[in-house]
Image (cartoon, helix red, strand yellow):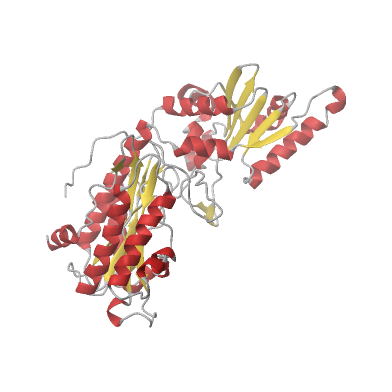
Length: 448
């Protein structure tokens, strides 16, 4: 496995964000205005805050990474305007807490048409709404929804003066979600880079793992490798689950010691310029798989590889789930873990007793990224893949230690293998190229 970080882009060009706003404008009705809110800082304790994480949709349209801001997109008589309201320059605040962009630089660098302070928001927004026909905003954003209705009430108070109030409210989320679902060349390059960095972290974890260490010590090795290559933050809470802890899907305590002959499941991905990797690998603490571990691991790996081979435009998660189900169910049947008529077991999706989560999800600015899956009445995900979609594939098998229906050799084994995939014109690209996954590669790396 190579340890050389691939050359790539560290951040998206501003032209990318301008293009995204233009795409949203193209979806807007004439004589309409759209609202998007930035995130707020979240208090951790007393007067300290968690590391700031921008609202992903706001970031998608602006690239602007300060709290409390608001973006307005106005389309009227064929004219399109992007307007930002943001925190003002404040010398004393900046001495204590850090520099702000300010309105002048926001216009210059982020290419907004106009920028105002938050103090000017109350007066100006009501003016922008007056005479408009339609308003777009995210219906599930309770704070923004309340703001919108306050603004509309201010406009409605002037009806007797002949002011027209917007009559149509439209949820902006489905529009942005569809735009976010198809990644650009620049986005894919960023995700290629963060996958490579995350792969280096998984390699480091395998090489540092040994019995007696605590799970959190391996977590720290992963975070160190992320930051060393420019991915300062993890995209989500890192899972380092030794032994039976792997059977807790979202285990993040990471506070137990590693035991020889156990497996270690690590679900970890870095974040680069807001874009997430989401990679899972499972490997032996001792560096060598036991025979039962090896058999189950190879079954999960075979299922993943069969699923990957089928990915191309026009395929659906529903189709991929059929492939994974058939492979895992037959494998469990052959091992005697499940019994009965094989055809009936496949039809009943009998593997779901041990493969208890979904096969994959969209990936991008959010780990579980936005985008409609087009779920039908049978709860199948029927949206056809298209070039530029990025998704995870993550089959697994979970054999809890307290499941006495299982033979003793299988109990306490939890395995998941997760790759990040781009749908291409011809098929797919696996972004998770430098994270060891075969038994031979894992054991060889851990032997070094």
